[in-house]
Length: 153
Image (cartoon, rainbow, N blue to C red):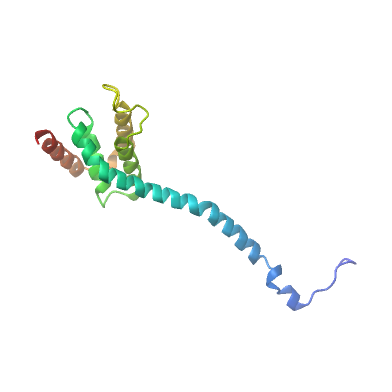
């Protein structure tokens, strides 16, 4: 022991204010604060996108099915995203791609004839290239029949 050190009693050694637990709790609280709200915002954003996609997809696909060559692929993605057997992570990416298709703000606005949907097509194509294994034959069949109904009716 050094000359300046004073001996402590067992009660002082067990004093909770001197333990590491409060420090560890503070560190964990900070970690939770830093990670909690971003996660909540991401979850809320995903829910908002799901709602927007559910409300906006069919009106948009009805308006554009005869004008865009990738309508069948967009419908396949829609049916895959709605399938309970599709993995959750894949659904999140699919909903994001469909939200890009549905929402009015784009890199290239859809009102420009000829080039307006090229960015939407690129997003759908990239999604299919990366997550195409999650789009099953039944999703493609559902998309084909829905597209026929849209174009006939």
